[in-house]
Length: 169
Image (cartoon, rainbow, N blue to C red; front, side, top):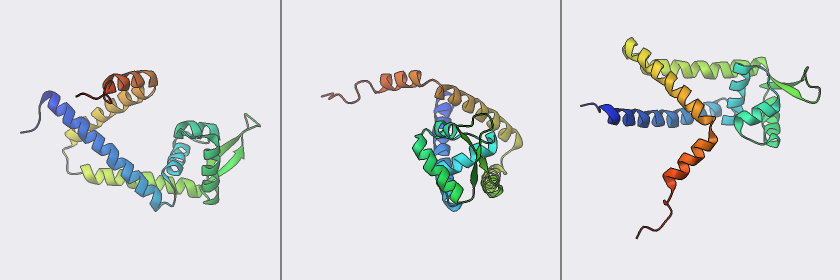
């Protein structure tokens, strides 16, 4: 018998966590197959979806230092995936732009991911797929909102771990 109520919600949360872990594994393997690291692949994806970006925006997105972004961009430049162009708005900075090869590579990576997801859900009833897509949209919005509130996450983690390291004998 399938779980009901709160048990069903907890089971769904566990399956979503497993999906996130599987997606991380998939991203890592896909990046390796393309000859780049996960941060490099993420950068290519950001450039595809957001257009040319200054290195500072890439650093913020990846959560890494500017020196690390410089090294990452050097690797992507040598691989022929990106170029640095003068920033027409700020002469002190550059914009990172996908090359045709970089665009083709990241587009192929996204297309392959989409194909693999479609293959996995192809046998499901269309109404179930549509409802699941709506549920995922709500989960994405909730997690994105929560990700913008570091203070509440810190407070909740502190509350949930209070006393965890204490000897309870």
